[in-house]
Length: 194
Ligand code: TYD
Image (cartoon, rainbow, N blue to C red):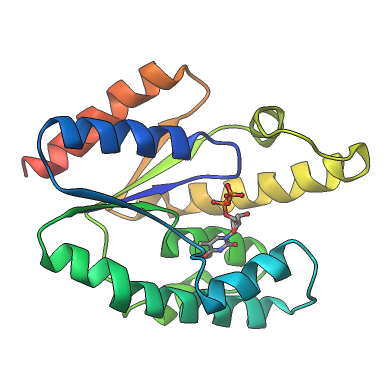
């Protein structure tokens, strides 16, 4: 089973992936938690670009996310699925369909570029307004707050545009972590019990 957790920075998906990991492990399910971008060679280039240390175009960034993901699929994701593990993805190609779509790339093209990647069984999108998400993330310089909020709100809209995708579940992430997890577990159980 492949579960993808998504949302803008500060949405709480990392907490929810921890909760899922613990819950599956207490059920004696072999579970692995994977994150993108990876810390492999392409992932490291991406981190440098996303932090602004290296300049890059949107196209170059998209290409690197795809290369990073190809490596991740071959080295970690496919082997784990073949071993029958539950794979939790903290970001996957749905991040590309939100962030790089918000940066101007056509979403159907992004979907096509990612067809090599195993499809998730469920995509959980943790939705909340950008200003709330930003309050949850520590330390920003005052100067970039407005720009960042505008950007995240654009990414949020791109996520919400994926609502018609049959794998996607939009979750209200303004609630407490426990309330959110109740819904997460209900949604995951529905898919798991088929
Ligand atoms: P994130 O999970 O937010 O890292 P952390 O919480 O550890 O700082 O991911 C880093 C950034 O990468 C995030 O802003 C979203 C971006 N990203 C994309 O733009 N496209 C992608 O395909 C992926 C996987 C991530």
